[in-house]
Image (cartoon, rainbow, N blue to C red; front, side, top):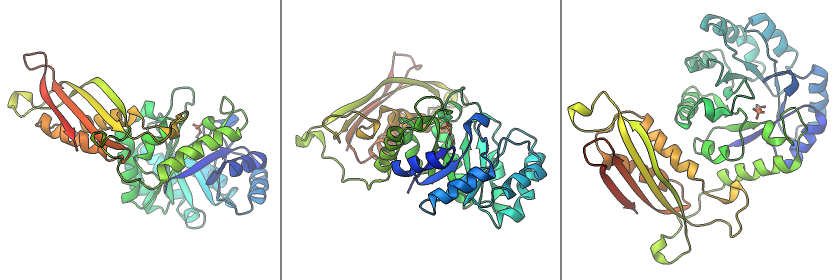
Length: 352
Ligand SMILES: O=C[C@H](O)COP(=O)(O)O
């Protein structure tokens, strides 16, 4: 079940995060950078305050990729349930030195390696992390003003990261200026946890935690975790449904059964109309709705998988992806190739 990691600055914020329902209390000083560390004293005071109610993680700091420095910072925070270390931009060799230099400590203290989506992430290091005995890996962002995680990596790429972590038996987390609408989009990937700071504050990430904001994220994560309801009845049965649509979403992609269509891309236009049973009569928050972002992510995921011969295959796969969400009762999918002579050629299907 996907968990909620809340980054806090000390005991008072930890208490607020607990009240709001966070699953992991993650200690961090946002004024000191993406992985700014709190002092061992603040760590001890927070562990005492949390008193075992939830695991407490601590970041090692925005450190140079240098094994001794990172080892020392980890040793000073060994009282935490997890210690997060950053794989900041550096050569592959230097990053491996740090990873294998922590192997002895990894046997004592569960370690989480943090890749940065905007900091030359090298996911081939996941195998090294597993060999060195790391507990898990997560992705975050370094430049907090340069957009959130999904600005740097697509849902499809993040899905590959989650799958690669699973293959190495590493716990995996996603973070990076995440906002409420990101939760359902990333929830589809079923990471072990999502991490937040800025979305939990009253404004910038350096500002204080807001209980309301923590509870909003809690509700969204709960909505992802709650067991899928039986599929909503199709519109034809007379039940009330809303239509969530994506119209004329045009992407370049590799498609076509002819030889001349291979090794190149052409424009394909997608339109999707999903009949959705409303979960609330007065929707006012992300947790109340089915987002059109999920449809667009499904389209992007199909485009990213490479060459597809037939529009029929694309349409079926897209319908299946949209219907995978049990809130969707029925779906219409139209796929049109735009560069084959007439304005458009393609297919329209309705499922079920
Ligand atoms: O570990 C999670 C981070 O603290 C995320 O912080 P952010 O949401 O401000 O990027």
